[in-house]
Amino acid sequence: MADPRGPEPAAGRLLELGVVDLALIERVRITFAAGFNVLTGETGAGKSLLIDALGLALGARADPGLVRHGAEAAHVEALFDRLPEPLVCVREVGANGRSIARVDDETMTAGRLATIAGPLVEIHGQRDQGRLLDERWQRELLDGYGGHAAERAAVAAAVAAWRANEASLATTAIEPAELARRIALLEHEAEEIAAVRLVPGEAAAIRARLDASRHVEAIARGSAALAGLLAGDERGPESAPGAREQAALAAAEAAALARLDTRYQPLVERLAGAAAELEDLALEVPSRRDGGARPSRPGRAPGSPLAAVHAGAPLRDGHRGPRRAGRAGRRGGRSAPQPRRGAGAATR
Image (cartoon, rainbow, N blue to C red):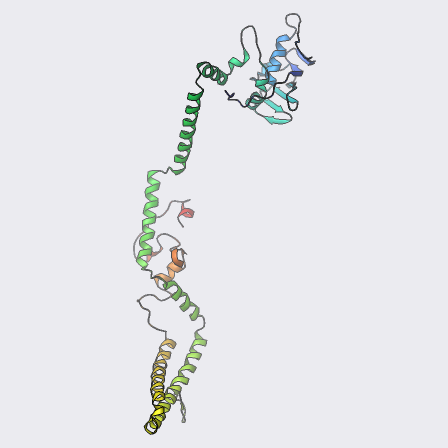
């Protein structure tokens, strides 16, 4: 069964223990030999302090009262012969209560230090067994003794799924008042767009007319010239015949020839058709010059509501919608629900 604090590192013995300014100890460094090592001394010599120092190096709770009197901080360093490379665990405890933990010069929390170095050492004392003080290890021992590995895995999977569902639910949760406000705002915008009565393809026609309005003078001159060519120039004492009159004269001449030679009859019909087409063109050019063909629906000039919609936010099929809620409503005399400050970016 896996240790909840992480995978068990490769076993390695304690090589050295260095202690500086810890309680009665001013400075000491102990090198341990392979095999069984024994430390002896009189009562109060500091044997238990070495165990406390080792506990600090393993991530135990730091007590500022252990700092030597007059010193700013206590320093403990433990070197382990851990495979594949040695492990150096350092702990500094300040007199002000601040604690710093490092593993191979990487600063970390005491809990992380305990996860890495704790499994390397078992401390047995007269009144306690160090690892049994860890609540996480206590659960491991109980489940291991009861043979509950399968049940523990099932519960862990269920809890993980529950937490994932809870996190997903939290991302979609929204206050009822905020939800109602957003729904009202979207309904109002939909009403504004529907009131404009957009027609598919109408935006392209509006763009074309807007582009043409930038060249009014050139279009007027060209239309006048085209009308003169089709209908003729009636100004002056000698008016020049237009294409319409020329086609009519050609049709009359062809008809006279057809009475003499039937081979000219098809030309008569074609010239008559051309004359009729030129007649229609001569009538249509002035209407375009004076304002263009009438729109299929009233109120669709560039200044109509469609133009305001076209100037706003993008819509599907190339149309564009109102930039701000309430624009069309104000034009129509209706009041629009106003978004709260800070929510405008989400509703534009």
